[in-house]
Structure formats: structure tokens, C-alpha cells
Image 1 (spheres, rainbow, N blue to C red):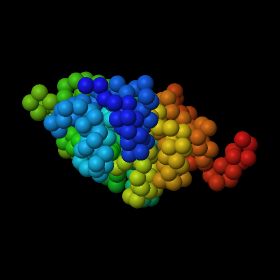
Image 2: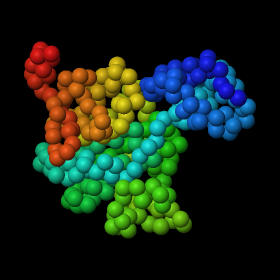
Image 3: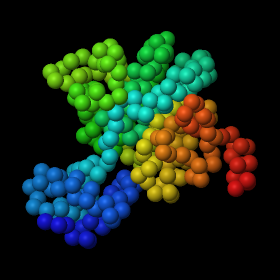
Length: 284
């Protein structure tokens, strides 16, 4: 049964309010394809029936299931490669020198999905900087989807998932076969702490981060949400920390408080000093 236009508009508005994800009317087919299974699994005959139930209680587990179904969980190990090369050649060497006294590094991986990105960060650290095993390295991985976080915590991946981006030597070194799947070793799993977090909510524990990965997230948001998010990330970063965005994302024309830093083919960002930010704003 084709959902009513009113139901589709309500769902687009709900998803935007709860996750900031913008779904245009010409993408309603995405809503249908992802929410029909939710309706069926809850013994509902249609999306209209699903909408009626969610409208009655937007705080219900059913409403949460609708939001989870609409979040994009596309990810892979060492996705795009060059951010991880930049970690090894520039970002981590700089921060290791700066943090030699405290021997502490804090890394936040936002929208972490099923965990391939934070685990890739942990493996990259183990491979390139074995001395950091004696440091306090905290990798916090967050996502608003509790279901994918449960998968991430288990560290178990299907053959197809480990085939995407993970070099065979690293698979052999850091994973153990579990039936037809692969589980990442406890040593790497222990480096990552997974937490449920909606980026629209407050981040009370995410302060003084040395590196923030928030890749391929801004592309789903409208401009006001992008600006708000970048400003809040800048407050969570240490003054000499690094922000790593997706290849198609930038802070330009959104937040003048960042200075671009080119490393190889990629551009990364650091908070500008207060005086630099004032000069930049005055020039616009």
C-alpha cells in the first residue's frame, strides 16, 4: 500500500528533528524501502499504520526504531586510505611530541556505525606507533544507532566486510576466525569505547579531544546544522587538535574558526587562534 503524502511528510520532519538528516521529497522511496520492514516486524499492515503509532508516542522504542532505520551505516575498514596515512606521517607524530609529558591521547570517532573506522584507527596506531601501547590512548566511538553499536562492540565481521579495505596481513595479524566470520582481537577491541550518542544532543564527556573523526556526516545535514555541529566540535577539540572530515566535506563558508592543514592529498583542520579567527572574519 502506498503511504499517504501526509505520512511521508511527517516522517521526513521526524527524521530531521531527531537526527538532523535531511530527506527531500523526491527521496521518499528511501523512507518506504527502509520502513516497510519496520512496519512488518511490528505486525503492521502499512507505513500509514506505523506513522499512526509513532505519532501517538514519539518517545517509544518504535519511534527510535524508525530513526535507526533511516540512519546511513555505510562504512569499511581504512575507508579512503589517505586519512590513515596522514595519521601516520603528520598528525600522530605532531601530537605524540606535544603530549610526551602527559602520555595521553584522546580520539573521538563520531557516527562510528559498526566500528570499522575506530578499529582501523586502533590498528593504525598499533602498527605505526607500538610505543603508544604504554600510553593512555582513549578512542571513543559514538553513534545514535544502538543496534549497530552492539555489533561494533562484538568486533565480529562477515567475510565481505573484512574484504573491504582490510589488507590480508592485517586480517591475519589482528583477527581470529569465528565460524564463517572474523572477530577482531581483544587487544584492539579494548582500545575502543563505544557509546550511544545523538550528535544533536549535548556532549558532556567529549571535551579536550586531540583528534575528531566526523567523516561523511555533514553531507546529510542542512547548513545551519553543519555550522552548529562544526562550532561544537571546535569547542570539544584541544587548540592544537585535528578535525578529520570526509573527502567531500569542508569547513569553508561554514566556520571560520578552523585553519586548513594539507597533508598529502587530504585537507584536515585545526582550530584557529582567537586572533586568527578575528582577522578571518573581518576579511569576509
